[in-house]
Image (tube, rainbow, N blue to C red; front, side, top):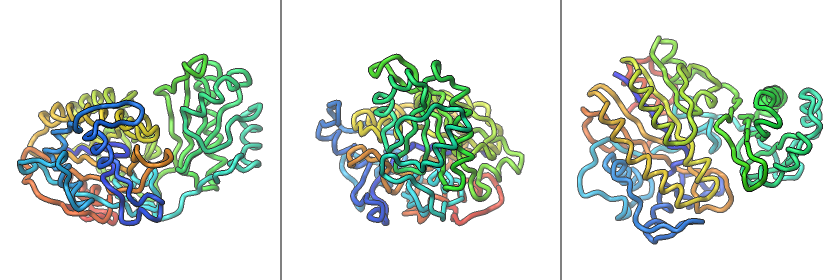
Length: 403
């Protein structure tokens, strides 16, 4: 009686009812990607042919999209009844960031306002940077603005190598990001700087400090590595992971789940670089997951490599690649295992800017013994946690309603 939650990071299926509050009315990650594929269009790469995700569609993705949007486009439709239970879910958390979405999926919506840095330059409070430089023995910082991570490394990487000043930047998320060269600056030193920054920004209610190590010797060669580390504030209440851990269950988390939950209840952690390797590790972890265990995985590339970078064709290809591998996981499920495929927010690659988008997300569930059905529009992501808790015979908690 195991449970698996796969989070396709940023895979939204149409603007949420409150999207206008976030400037995202009309955002539609899946819909706009599908339309571009059907028209043979991409962003910086042309591609031809409709989006080929037959396994997700068999699970009911088209019907879930229809619940969110009111109609199913022909390229997401299926002539046969879905094999799983499908629905869409709305976020109740006051934000569209990664921790809020994941915590709500795990039963703890974020009902407080995060702190954010203003869209000014410099954007960080002077006293914050002064204390950081003093405590971390830094000669200063570079950046001090809202920026794309790859762009700011290209812009300041050479100066960073010359001065060893770390590159500090933020985004529309509640985040303080620090980029530094793995070799010239040192990975351990970068982590130490981030730990100091985490303590300094706690009073500002900033959700995450992120270490962004990179390698290379010139802008054309600079590349971020898999040694990213997130320093998150812990969830404000026990999550599904905590309840499972407290009950003595086998808990396995894949990718950045451990960082997102500040390593509270996250059990055995499997890290990897990129969706393909993350799926390999998911298969590896699932093979060792004990009966009654929980596996919680995040597939980051959709968001970090394609959503934020507004790469339509890259996002489409990543969806197709993951879809093609789903049978490898499903064929090892027993009748008592429950698979849930969902997302934490949107990141429409056709939308202006580079930020997340406030969208509904798919909720696709499957087991070899499941009776296909429509789950409707769920009023909170927390219904996922409630359902998994019920499946695993864990104590019920939080605002979610099991389906």
